[in-house]
Image 1 (cartoon, rainbow, N blue to C red):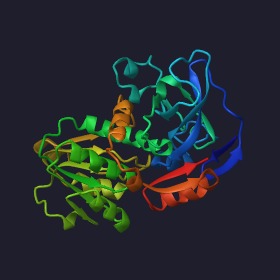
Image 2: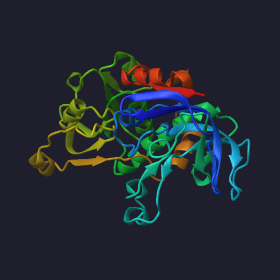
Image 3: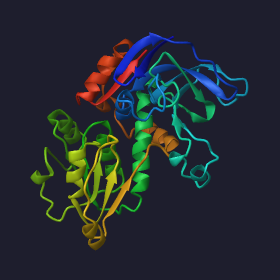
Length: 330
């Protein structure tokens, strides 16, 4: 089969690899579409994936074409979206319900072959059947949405009527915008240096959109500030925009080397909370329900649908900040 392969830091190509075979409790999925994510860029840089080469792609959906000998929950022809999370269920963090912090954390498309391929293998327990009205390739949006749902789980103390500021209006920032609207925010402002992306944020109904938070009138700061960029400069600026008693959520994936400065006295004196959200945790099924209920408009969120053969070009577009969610299709 054809697959995108990251063979070394900075090197990616579409190559022919061996067809996958399911284990007893696994299925083989014919991939309809696979989304690109910041994690894929980190893997290309030589971060995250413990070993290379690897087939990337942790945001994907498709049709079951083969089942393992002990699979009874799914059959060939079933359309599914796939949670890429692979937990050991034995370590300290798994045993206390914090599986996303698993000491042996793994993920399809990060530590094992993923969905940037014609076919991918997944545990049956990681697959969610799709309702008839959902287009299979659009369901690649469920995985990033599940990360956003996890982000709002972290922000569960957010009260009705809060003011929210989001840095970044790429796919993840826009998803956080959509969820903020659903969780009772009084207003959601968005900051981005990309005018096209800001235009999409306005289309989705943000309260205000600007190239800098200085352009927004919030002298007391915001109750919740979310970084969805992973950019060091944006993070530093965002930390200074949190109002008294507010919360800063690090949601974007930063480079390993990124650094930001905090003011311990201000954190103490103003009772500011600084926290983070890591991937998916008990949120994939809820994201699938939200997606099926129309929480996201795929035509707004998906800007590019490119053939798998153009995977390197798709990564280039993503790295350049062009478009919104970019899908590749085998």
